[in-house]
Amino acid sequence: MTRSRARDANVCGVTAAIAVIDGKWKTILLWLLESRPHRPGELRRRLPGLTEKVLTQTLREMEADGLVHREVHDVRPLKTVYSLTAFGRELSEALAPLSDWGHRRLEKLSESQADS
Image (cartoon, rainbow, N blue to C red; front, side, top):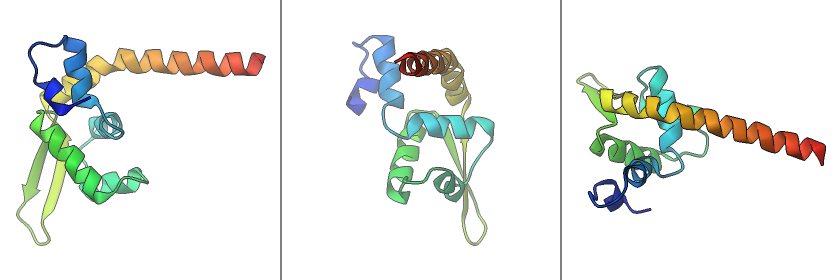
């Protein structure tokens, strides 16, 4: 899905929402930032396989979409902290029922594999 669909007024709301969270890392970053603000290094350590380049790109997209706030502290070395905005928290709350559905689906799949 293209990033432009996140801003297209002529798509349904679900499509616009999915365009904002589309990607391998965005939902898990939302989940991690929901608990507390994190520095980029902390996020990378929590997510093996996530490169610094992709983390930076993903956080910039999330910042542009109004989901995260980037705060740079003027100390040496520079300290950057990312946190969810109120809009990002709202999205996270909206995704909670979808997450619950996903867990029920996984349980159902697990049960059907056990019966096989």
